[in-house]
Length: 77
Image 1 (cartoon, rainbow, N blue to C red):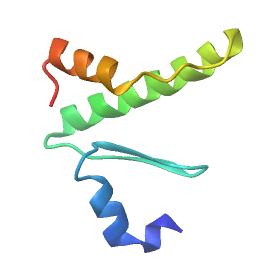
Image 2 (image 1 turned 180 degrees about the vertical axis):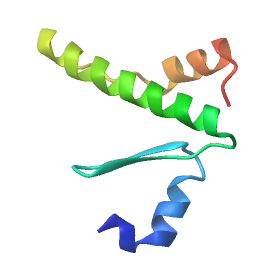
Image 3 (image 1 turned 135 degrees about the vertical axis):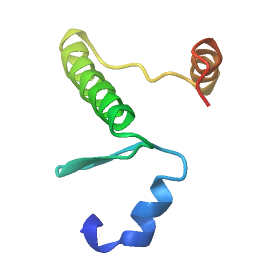
């Protein structure tokens, strides 16, 4: 269980604010409660979008180049 692997879970938050635990839960961190809730809402909306999009065809993952372009456009680290 992931809840018993504290060091591994902590390491996941070095690069991520949200961790999805397969068939279990979502763990969200943030520096302020409102920011943390925003991250949770974005994760929920994104998950819902993926489920809805899968009904019209197979998902196409974005490449690293496209992700980096979005990070620059939205000023995300």
